[in-house]
Image (cartoon, rainbow, N blue to C red; front, side, top):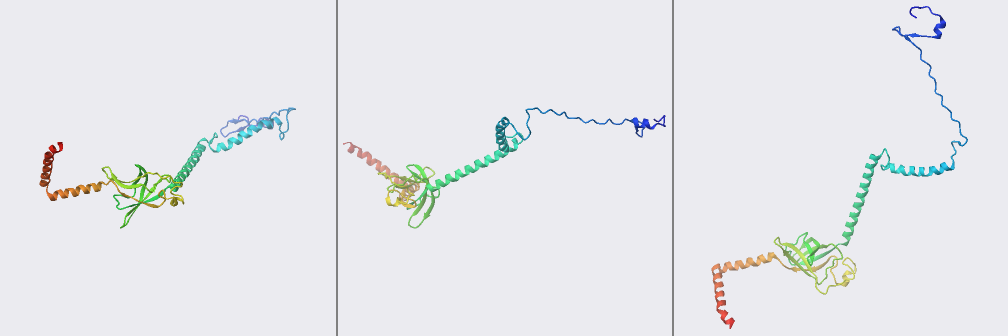
Length: 271
């Protein structure tokens, strides 16, 4: 086209060419042909889209049921996309549910245990080391603890809480305050005496006081001092003071005289 600048109009129409500024020819693009979709002939057995055959409806029932079953399960992590998120949610929900059930069970157990406890007041002449937390035992078995000590000029009142209303304290029981062991642990020991009563009601019942067989709730029972290491130490202390006043030498001389008298009395004892 550059060598022959004069061209006919018919040649321009048949093969039009476009030249870039660099002088290279550019061919025209071929027109795109549309792909025609092949229409399938409708078979005689096909039916309109809005209507379904009875067999199709019957087969769709289990499919719909399965789909509706999997839909709520997908919310809890049983789907393909929400396994991780649903698993975390299921773990949190189950953990919160278990925590709530455990808390409710513990509260119910505490409430039942609280309603089954009752209190007993022990009247003593001396405290003998009784304080809050001192165990209360029946035949060596711990059944309660002291929760409060009320001192007065007349006596000492130790308020104890018994763990279960099925544990009864007969009124004829021997109540002693004992100190046992090298650490001098103070304990309140209860020893029931024969005959053992058989009450028809418990200590928390309203008719407990009318029978008069056991110690009822918040009633008093007198106790006495039993084994006391403090008292034992006091006795030996007084003996040591008396020996010190007499004199150690005189004490040994008295012991020698007692031995000689026993030796002289042996023949008489043999005869």
